[in-house]
Length: 314
Image 1: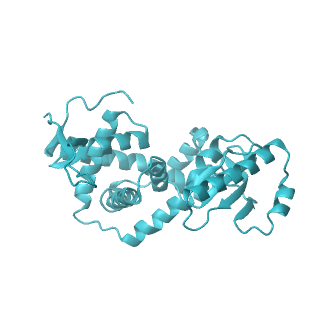
Image 2: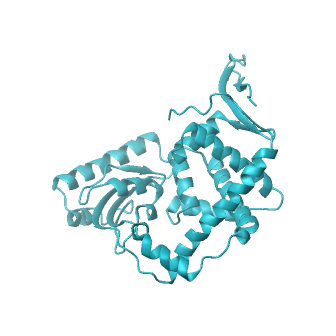
Image 3: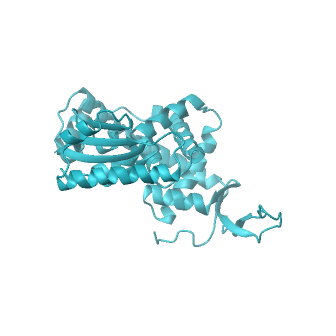
């Protein structure tokens, strides 16, 4: 069934005169699932965050809406859990759910939108754990061993890095002028380090009494996504030995340098990898169970979409 365009209109008033502004189209509904709308802006955000075509993104949002509809019957996610996972997103201390939320932040999502995405994912996690996972058979030792022997290229450690970071803090309640001055200062430091006019030893000596500059060096290996959000993409792309351009974060500006890279290596089949492989095998079974359920739920639901929304253009 084809859905007609349902516009979302901004009828704001002029702040100075109180006169009504001409109506402006700011969004529209591209699909409904049992009466609940999916908007164009939500579709485009899903497409960009997950790297999907519009048709794939719409299918994903429809499935998500049906799963959340079921979860609403018995799943409750606490605000404390949302807060905890949001902290992981901001510090780079987690993966999985955190990765999708990090990408959402890079798309410019606000705090409310980010919290809602995290709440939804935690809700879906509970739904899967309580409703679907008990139906999936456990992986046997023989299945785990076969997986390990036949899929060696899938079982590598992630690329890991050692880095040096220079952090120049912003003053409290920093003005735009403050930010420009701080950025200009760290740009000069970066240029001088890159050209060799300034050494790390000289920099440490020069800023020893400046509490706003922090110089850090890793003594452990970290993956790109174990760094703070704004630094993770820089780490994954920066050549060894080069200093980055200044990276703006809510905490101030950073320069980062990769000092060493450890390439992926084949992992030993220890207890941790055994559990990981077992989880992968069980996930395939779980996916099949969930796919059967969603197909049944789609068939009995009222799903309407705007003709042509599945434009293959990205």
